[in-house]
Length: 169
Image (cartoon, rainbow, N blue to C red):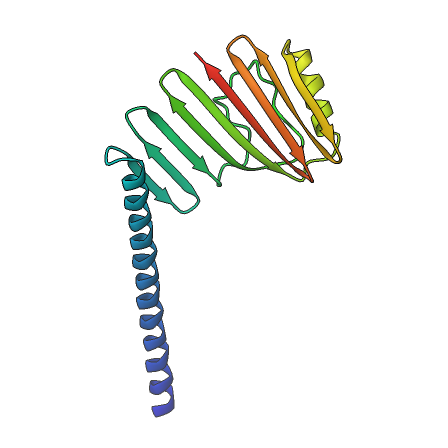
């Protein structure tokens, strides 16, 4: 019977210790986030509001809002419909930047095939974008395109791609 009580006591103590460690970990993590937020606010200016949550960073100033989110794994719905979706690869993260009347997105992809840039260039042309610049080198390349107040910059290299989109409403 003593063995059973001792075993039960050890289990309860282990459970309490686990909760205590979890609470300490969460408190330390939140404290680190708050310290980082304050450091960013100081470097940008005291009027900046910084919020760090897990894989998301949001910075708000009088000029606009910047958000980067590594939990978003799809093409943003807010991107104007005139811009064809880049469908090659897998979305890793999305950054949005809203300043005054301009909106910008940076969508980062991985597992992108070599021919993705050429395919997207044709998609942009099919959507009446003017291709301003294209360069191909090795397994990657770069292009810029525009249509009215929309601008698209795409960089592809070694299985990754960055699609940057800007609007000027």
